[in-house]
Length: 167
Image: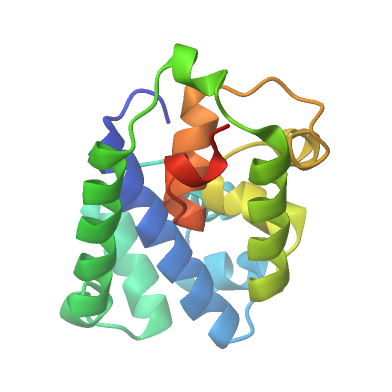
């Protein structure tokens, strides 16, 4: 996902999250849903994770599988979330030097509280942030070095202010 700028990454992450939510509302597995849409399972999985920027043919197939019109998918709520996260990202960009100021205990606390509030696993948080599950585990257990890209992805999903997790 590094080949895309940060705004595109946020957009693709939100598209993936919404696709995941809609698919699970229909109680489809990724395999079942990709079959319904006549697309490859891995391609759809990458789309939900936000790792690929889909072409219009693929996206239209997915929307048809969900029986959702494009204007319904990209509703006001979607755009409000997108702009809120973009402004948040611009306000909270972080450098490698600032990573050293991050309080790992506070970060781990926010991660656990978010997972508890939304009743999600480490794997789901990993998919939402496009960070490996082992890295999520390492961050929650304060065993992993913190990188700016990880903090930015977590901050966007968890919607936390960097000042909340600094020393």
